[in-house]
Length: 261
Image 1 (spheres, rainbow, N blue to C red):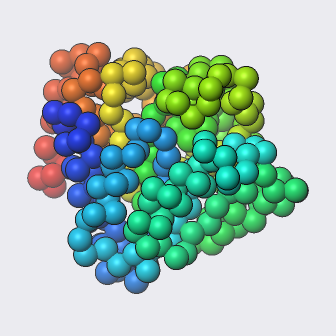
Image 2 (image 1 turned 45 degrees about the vertical axis):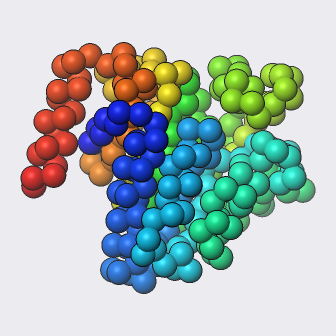
């Protein structure tokens, strides 16, 4: 795992977008397409916007999936992750090949199985993930299931996760936040050949510290990223503010080694 520190959220977004664009162009050059998993949420806005402006990406050769969606939520709802991606990324980039999790499908089991088959039909080149205020990746709240091999699972959202959605302005109050969601599983996320985790903002500092300095545990779901050899976590000064100097130096040395190898 590589840790990249940026001065602020804007610089973080730009640096992460440059790496992502390079990975996407390399995949297209090697295999004539790039399969990518997209993250959503306020923390991803600047990054996704910066990525749409990166030159040289043949978006017609990009196949996109997303990490999660609320159970029962129509695409017309302002908090729908499908709507988020359509309006803020897919249409701007010009991606024609994308697969959505239909959280409001009449038969949820069939819908989840369908997108799971599409996802696992070929290897995944790149996954974008955030880290939640409770340490989650996708909607894998603590204690996360590190064992299931299913590509997508239906999960119960904990209170901390639901309050984060209110705090980000997607819902007026916690009563309006769905209690269940469909989430890409932890093991499925780790199957991506490369993972880029974009984590700005002071409100993520405690989760970042717990996931990078504590034990690798389902109680800190994003800690599992430390087991993926080709993961880069982008932090700004605020999200990294609680990390010890020892942690910063250790990851900086690992980053230098990776660059020089």
